[in-house]
Image 1: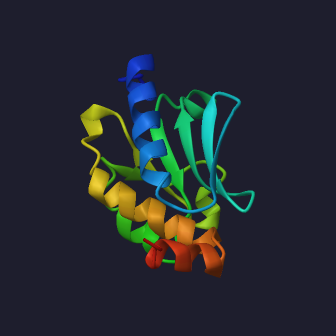
Image 2: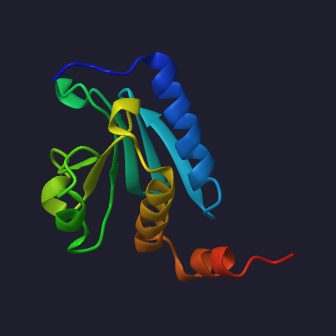
Length: 131
């Protein structure tokens, strides 16, 4: 696959994803092996993948509930079944500009994935913030 993004694109996308997940209590951001992981309670709920195993993609792999993957990958311009995590129901989201990512939907996918991994206390804190 041909790479349609550059390092500036990767940094811009990473910054945007970090901004989105920073709203969720207890999230850690972990950079390793050229990728960025997003964790709750030490469990990954999303990955920013850059040219994962030479696939050429700038993409987000995000944890999803049963049925979500099948519904989304019908739009194969934006979504795909990610290697390794796909059999567990995760969804891949293309983040290069050519794929025209829907950042509102990406934010919703990240929140959904975070809720699947977060504690009840963290979810309550997010849903009912104290002034």
